[in-house]
Length: 422
Image: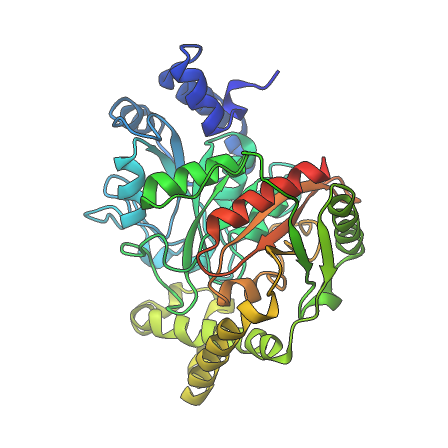
């Protein structure tokens, strides 16, 4: 029997509507789980049980009524500190909520707490551990959000993605991670690092929860991923420009996933993308780091000693590059976006890895976003779904990606693939 704290938001809301559960009981179950596991997981950058209970009691009616959410600590909250994973912002109290947080509250959700992010959602990791095995990283930069969903602290959490910061940690923690089309959720009140890349998305324990949350916050229709589709999908199997970085467990996973989808009736065709995509992929570090160095102009000038050595090195590298690299990189991104619809013409979605392999051991490194950066810079939706375990017993995921605006379809095909995998 599923414990109350492990219910998805969709399941909890259905039980509340049917009178089998109350929102208060669900919140207390999550709080009990936090009390039991947070000392080991360290998912929160800021958490106050009394404040969470008060927020739960004050939650508004709406499609997310009474649902606890985790808010990544690069998104502003009016009633909780927002510290960006950096001592330079220690104790900072915004006056207002980020636009996405305001939208979640307006839909009836309440903020359980602020979740750990790597420093400015970039490199230097926080203390969060993987709930599947605390000796391993949960991934990053949305570390606390992924770990919190995986541990049963809240059913839905915000993540942000510049390279692979939603999809990779979700895969590592065995949950669903959804990066919508670029710009779907407004970035007002977010500590934006890369103007060309940063995208706000969600993590949850089901695809239906992702669709529910995104629909409730955006006013758009993200569909019903669990609804039966009229036919099997046509999938392009793409390993991409980082194919040689796939660990043996990922190579085996993609072969297994492709075969399972074919047995269930899908067409799965290996596709090699044209060179324009490799060029965009190669440009990603320049655009990301050069734009991030611009974003951290104040911190580099006035709080340099409070920035980690690894981030200072990357920002100094970004500042040292000629501006032509940024211009050319943005142009390479635009060229790849323009070429993408033709590259997957005739296919419903792309089937690809979520990460190179299992979550690395230790907490000093959050893993490589090699299988995420291309899909981020293309600005289309991508989602990871749990797909079994690797050789060390840690979660693995497979990723579905699609064209800009195909968000509902990608969620629906992801649900089909997840069912085919069993």
